[in-house]
Image 1 (cartoon, rainbow, N blue to C red):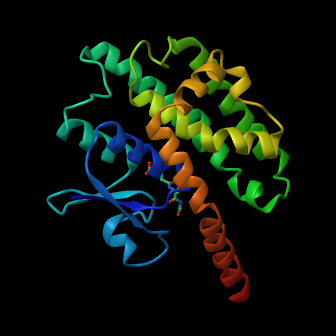
Image 2: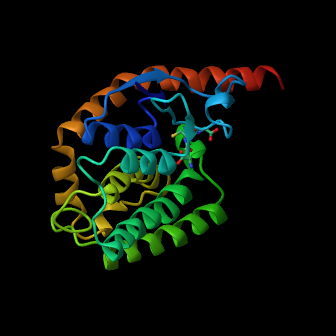
Length: 226
Ligand SMILES: N[C@@H](CCC(=O)N[C@@H](CS)C(=O)NCC(=O)O)C(=O)O
C-alpha cells in the first residue's frame, strides 16, 4: 500500500493527502518530521512530504507525488482532458506556489517567533504577493471551482497554499490577502465543505501541538549548542 510520510500540520503534506483522498486511493500515513539522516532516504532534500509507492519506490516533492498519483490512478481525474485547459490549471498552481506560498514562507520564522522582519524583506514579499493576487484575479474563474465547473488540482493547491500564506500575511504584514482575491471567500467555504478537507483540517488540528513541540525542541537544541 502507498505510504505518505510527513505530518498533518504541513500544507504540502496535505496537498498530496487531499489527492489521495479525492481519488479514493488506499494509503497509510507515517508520521515524520524530517531533520534526520534516515529521512533523507525518503526525501533527499529532507522536506515533507514524501511518498512510497506500492512498488516500494520513494518519491519526493509534492507536485511530483501528485503527478504520479494522477497518472497512475485514473479515477476521479484532477486535470481536464483538454491540454490547453490543463495548462490553465497548471498556471493557477504555479502562481499559487511561486507568488503566494514561497514569498510568504520567507516570513514563517517571524510568524512563529512573533518578531518583526526587516522592512526590505516585507517590501519584497509584498511586491511578489501583489503580482500573484493580480494574476489570480485575471486567470481564475471561481465558477464555482478556481478553474471552472470541475474541481481540479488547482483547487487543492490554492487551498493548502492559502492555509499558510494567508495566516502569515495576516500575522506578519497585517494583510488580508484572501480578501483581495475576487470570489475567494465563497470558494473557500465550498472547499471547506468537502469531506476530504474536513478530514485533513481535523487531522491538522490534532497534530498542531505535537508539531509546535518539535519546532520548540529543535530551537532549544540549536540555542544550547551555540
Ligand atoms: N517543494 C517542496 C516543499 C515542501 C516543504 O517546504 N515542506 C516543509 C513542511 S510544510 C518542510 O519540509 N520544511 C522543512 C525544511 O524546509 O527543511 C514540496 O513541494 O514538497
